[in-house]
Length: 94
Image (cartoon, rainbow, N blue to C red):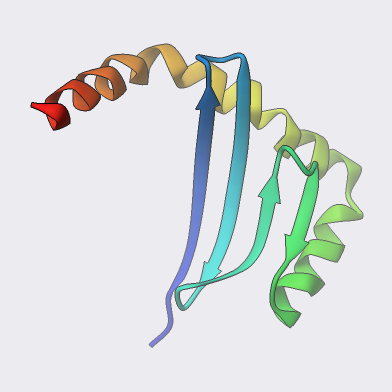
């Protein structure tokens, strides 16, 4: 058996002042490639991930689409998730 997984993560600093989008391509619990909006391109961590990162980085449209996820995915959903984040923070301390 094998496991292939894709995660999309948003990191917020000081509200939406600093937003970072990270997409991880995971195979059998190991990240083989990752897109980080702070870096601006894909990085491979395994031979297979390096091969894919090179291919994805050669496509300007794909890179622009990923870079835009900071606004389209993270900032867009920030208002909807804020109440859950702040409520949980308070509940943990109780």
